Amino acid sequence: MNATDKKILRHMQRDATLSVADLAELADISKSACWRRIQKLEQQGVIRNRVTLLDPTAVDLSLTVFIAIKTNQHNQSWVRQFTKVTQSIPGVLEVHRMGGDVDYLIKAVVKDMPDYDALYQELIKADLFDVSASFVMEALKQTTELPL
Image 1: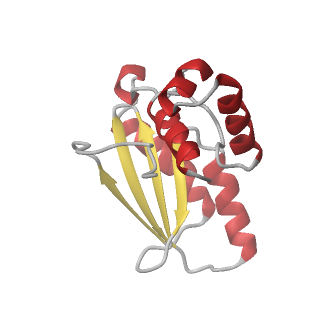
Image 2 (image 1 turned 45 degrees about the vertical axis):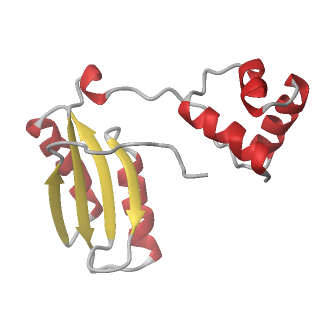
């Protein structure tokens, strides 16, 4: 990946609706060269998806919660069950296996506290040892842009 590819990707991260013509102009290359580069980056898996980012509050999902999970079961059977449970819960946005004091960290969005409780009731079907939740009061920085 060279500097031109990175320039294209920076602009695509900020605005995925830019046309190939717009991207080509911003990267100072031809439209056909730009299109070939984008296709190559998609084939290489550098570009995973092109999505629309929604404002959670505008779709009535104003409560973001980070859920710290500790487990006393570190086996593949438990991980498969945990993965199955977390993938089945629509409000769960991210699940990360961690190093340190917490085994898994989940990011979820819900409408309100009763909605979180419903999510929690689904989550504990995974046979968890310890669950701790922290609720976002204010997002000071939130981006999907990777620093290229």
